[in-house]
Length: 283
Image 1 (cartoon, helix red, strand yellow):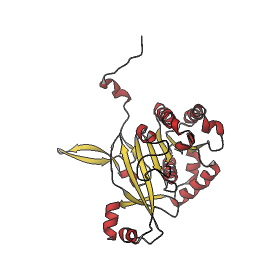
Image 2 (cartoon, rainbow, N blue to C red):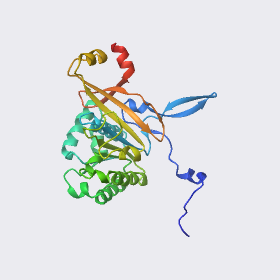
Image 3 (cartoon, rainbow, N blue to C red):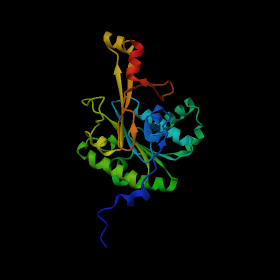
Image 4 (tube, one colour):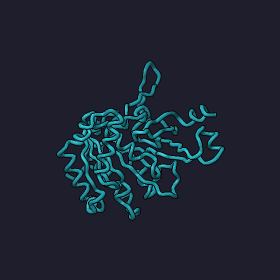
């Protein structure tokens, strides 16, 4: 019998994923929500993290905190005894070890749990893994199966199509479908080109990432350079003003405001307040 080409909606019920959050350890955990009815009224109920089994893209220009957010997510999940596969495409993994150890200490998280629960693939120094999606996916599948992994981070997905941006959509679709097949909650880190709007969801390869993934988080930074900016933001000249925004998520309701955040002394993300509240406070 040929493969069934269509389904009734009711047939999908058995495989439909539950809607709950996978914590990031930041205020983002309060910024994805579902709608529930109570006494005839509809209220927002935070799900407690990024949606379960979603693939979320984190994009921004260099030094906006993308990798820091991904690492913090990995540490928080590891502390909860969930296995995380961290695919490092840009930086050798010995540097990742040092970074995770420092952040764990700052967050007062037992690093022994982090060591045990984070599994690493180093594609940064392996041309076969970095240039051949099939080879990397086979390695990831083996790790997921053997280590019972539930969360996957690729930092950065951009590095898998470096100098081949015409293939960006194809490569991203391959890894997106792979994570769906293996029922993983995923985070892709994406780099922006200098010519792209810093506040848009666009990344290297155009809008391919944002169009395919389930949601996008945009991180941005601004150098305070003028007297007008000093007065507007209440920050001294030469300061860095950072913002974060959920640009979209097809799986849940979400906050759409720009939020001000800081990178702490320990290299973690601390989301503070919506930008309009921040500016009103300073004016």
